[in-house]
Length: 236
Length: 175
Image (cartoon, rainbow over all chains, first blue to last red; front, side):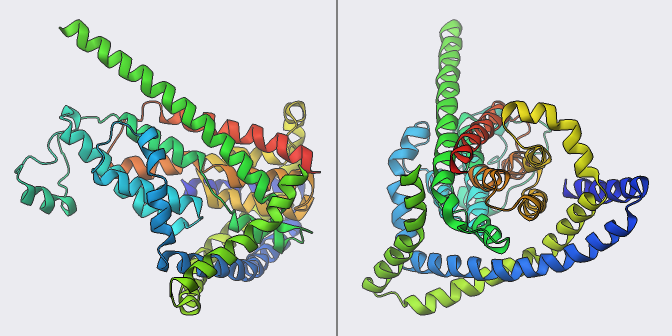
């Protein structure tokens, strides 16, 4: 994706610059911007280092784990279909907390694990599209061995996302960041008189987008369940 | 709005006080932990440095070529009707695909309009309230080998739209 975006940007710049006769400006911009990227990184290094340092303390002190447990009621509300002791719960919680605290590095691995766990949940539910993951045995020992080894399903079946996956991704994209660390660093670098003034409005905006996401997912979830229940009745 | 501004001022000190205090009381080696985390943070910045060079150069060249002015002129009638500065339009689109490409545009807005201008504030809030839609979806669904994403995309776009509307309203009150 980025390959295409970047190439198109550079090519348009050179073409259009030639067209408008601003080639020397384009040259200067290329050189200046490269230097600017480095001075920006120096400002960022300080802010990000500070934030990650504080977050390391929070992790070591068990605060992150506590928060993860703290959002359990919210998870039960958002994902009533996931059994209480299913590993998916844990990964989803870890992903959401990492998102809130702005720990970008920690939220993607947890998020991917959550998606895998949700796929396994579909297998356990007997969803035919997800069959084949555990074809070599159903004992707990084999199951465990397969967590790390996942043969490609090969059957070429198209898999549809489960309701839980849709909800999880929409929540994730609506983003719940508490402190927009990078934005603060950028604002600082470009001479804002108050780089942190955006924290509260940003929290308000992200809460609103998340609220809309929650309502949307809940509506979809309920209507989906009704349709499935209706189908079951017809079958009877 | 004043309450929001006050809240912004105290969030970071209170958070730092709480985390360090809690860690200290629960006998965590706070300083050593801090140093380890800070070192990790530096590594992260070092990792994104090449990306930033690449993208800032691309955006800088685009602006110098006059392409953004052209884009702004073309889009102005549409954007002014909804209270979005024309400068933000490319950002809104790029942001759906790539967070790092969006960062290049954000920095360009900060440089030309200033981070405390209406466009700058709006950009700051906007970038803090939603994630990259298509990137997140492709990476996460790949992990579950899902090809039919059902209602994920409309939901994600709706949430992004809600975040954008909220950002416009909030930013307008801050200037």
